[in-house]
Length: 260
Length: 365
Image 1: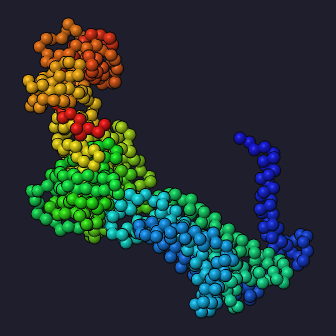
Image 2: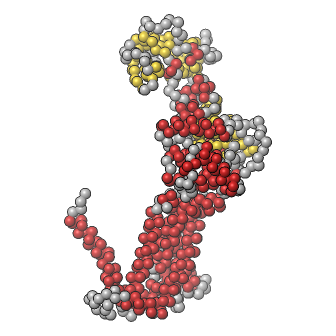
Image 3: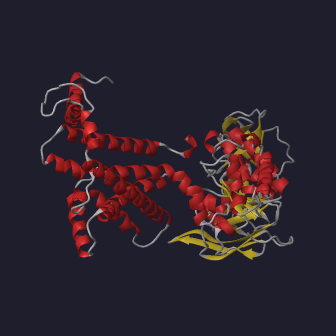
């Protein structure tokens, strides 16, 4: 069926509504003008300036350390959680599964305030460690849910076949389960990494004075006015997130290892 | 893995009042039987009769509620699946998608710590036996259903189990392939001497393959015996019905050893006389003779006059329904039989083909 002109116009309007601001941001990051909103010519200058700024470099380093270590930790814990929920039948399993969704749907601001209050209560100094732990806490459910979805597609008979052929539970997980769900684990890790890299609110509450990640850095720069180097930094952040999400989606769509 | 023991004479597999319940449902409701070394056993029953649960109990995926399973004289109760000398060919084949055919087959021996050089040689021999050696480097996703079936068989047999359990192994294959695989299963079983327990709902498959046939219903063994025994002397209406279509008629046994059908026809049975009272008479369609009135020899036993209601051609034979006054009999006639609908005929059944069954005490249908 061919779409009528009204349907096509609606589609264009929606797309414009969604992407026009982002497009403007990306364009201006290449605009050779300090304040002007008009196009003055193409330049990589703002990106160059970013590289030269010591604060931005520190924030980038901080983001890498926080996101990579948090993601590594959350991937291991989230995968273990999904395996436990899938392979074992125990009391309270349904409740845990339900609780998994809580951090996913809870407002970030609530998570941020709660974590801050908790850190104060247990006397954990705010800094990189507190940010990492905060990120792990909201990443785990995403990893667990994605890995669990992968496990549910996995035929139970394959697990039984491994046991039947002499593998105990550990060997079965090592030789059969993990290799087959690897794409799911990787997808979970990439989503978790994306969430961690661009998280602002929770990081803001748990960062303390010294530590600063890229989103926090952008926020503090904006306070002094929107400049083209902020556009450039935001564009970089956007590109990084986009790449991670697209890679994760590709991995999730991959049906079975035999197509590799 | 159990240490190798000198061969014994006892049964390889014995089930002793084995029961398994899931909540209020009795999936296996007390079965007792034993199976000999090198036997091809078929467990036949409709879906939901508990045959899959029986398989899972033997393989170790379920633990019995009560009763015992003995493999070669040792109880299997409490032994996890990975430590039983039993292997399974799964209905879905359940091959490992991330491993090649060779790695799939090598999985069992590898888990059991067989030395690498021996694994290689055993895998090659087994792949050769089921004729898929040339596919050794493929992934399961690149194989046809029949090929996957062979790989699943090889993956189980390479472990040299004492008992191999096959769960509806041919149900996913199309008809011609299924018939070819039947022959092949039988040949492989003969060559290896492993006891096969083959679960199926297909009666012709079971009759073709089995040395020992188990008919199962509602968690119980209705009858255990050779296919000929079970086919010719079904113990009750369920078995008679399930093993190919049969004419099962209500009748009354008289003191003189004959039975009287509801319509008044009197039949003589060759077997031991039934106690007077209600009985069922089973007549196999292929044992029912139909002849035109006047052409029938008067020496035939158990003659009944009737009228042909319907004649239908079903390929290799002609199915003919005859009204014999109060009952309709189905007869399978050879292709050339030329009998038309509406004709008056004489129906006869040899006395040795008149099988008496107990009246429907055990019949719930």
